[in-house]
Length: 247
Image (cartoon, rainbow, N blue to C red; front, side, top):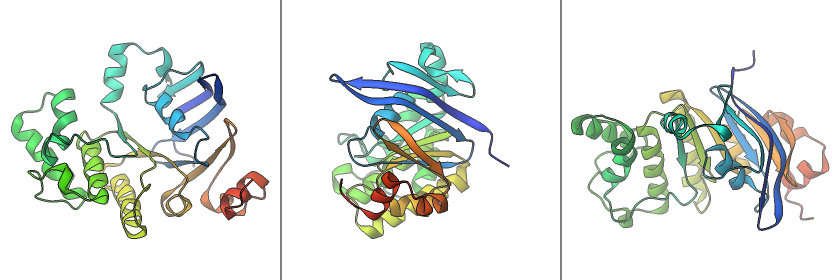
C-alpha cells in the first residue's frame, strides 16, 4: 500500500535572473518516505527545496502540506509548519559564534516554550543520536566538516520535526563520512519517524537510503520510481546520469 501523501508539489514554476529554472514541477511525497530528487549541478534542486520550505516564493504552482497550500499560507500558518519542518543545509549553516550546544538549542529557544532544563535534555539527546555525546561546549571551528554536518542534523532533529529536508548532505565529505551520514538519515527515520526529502547528485546516497527517487532535468521531473526502477530505466537522460556520461 502506498504511504499517505504528506506533501504535494503541483505545477511549480520559478525564474531567476530571467532564466526559467523550474518549468512545472510535480511531486507527491508519502509520509515516512525517504524521497530523493536527483539531478546534475545547476538544474534547480536547491531552488525546488527553497520553494517547498518557504525560503523562496514560486512564480506559479502550489506546495500542499496535508492538503494546505503553503504558497498562500499566512504568517501564522507558516509558524506552525516551521515547527514541523527542519532543514539541514548543504554547508551546515552553523553559527561560529555559538557553542555546539547553543547551535543545537537555537531552534528550541526560538520556536518552543520548553524550559532551560528541557532544552538541555533535548540537546543532549539529539547529539547522542548523531554520535556526538558530550561536545556541547565545543566551538564549531574545532569540528571537522563531517562533525559539523552531524551537528546540523542534531539541530534539525532536536525540534522532533515531521519532515527533514536535506540539501546535498554528502557534498564535500570523504566516502566514509558520506556513508556515516547515509546511516544517520536512516537512523533518524527509524528513531523519530520522520519523512525525509533529500536533494543530491550522489547516486551512492540515493541507492543506500532512498525509498523513492525522482530526477529533475530541464525544469521538470522526468522520472519517478524505486531505486531498482531508476537503475533499470532506459530513458537516455537517466542513463547518462547513472553512467556519468557528459552531454
